[in-house]
Length: 190
Image 1 (tube, rainbow, N blue to C red):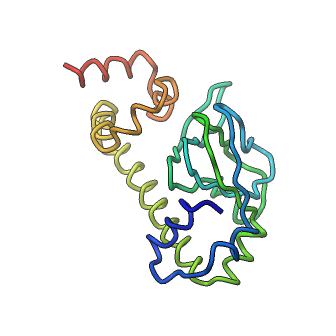
Image 2 (cartoon, helix red, strand yellow):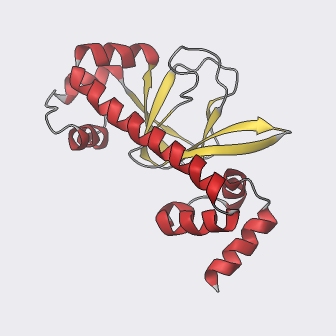
């Protein structure tokens, strides 16, 4: 377990005082390379990932193109939330957008931790509430503003993230061509 993850837990659940050594056996931290796949569509999804350093992204394949759904930066968790709860084949893939350090936890270890340390259930509840809220907000924003306005909103809300996302990946996330994304970028600069 990294100090970063432990501090993140304590930040969201200040009453959490369990020693790191008691939680560490349930987690595995590793380094992954840019574009390394952590999960592929149709594989059994049995792992959740915490980003210590770097960035991961969630996507699905459509007509041999990656359709990006979600990003995870430092201190964010990511998995295929459609499949992780029941261990079914994944409907999404997860890859590293840049060289990253991640902490992984299997579904079995996740459930065991929640049973042994109930305050971690509160922590993960807060994580999932935030993730669900963000997903709903993205859906509403996509439905109520133009793609150009979405680009401006995202750029103003997440300036550090937009600099880290390659243009083809962000164009996919927005559901626009690379050429249209370039026009939005030019409008933003001028």
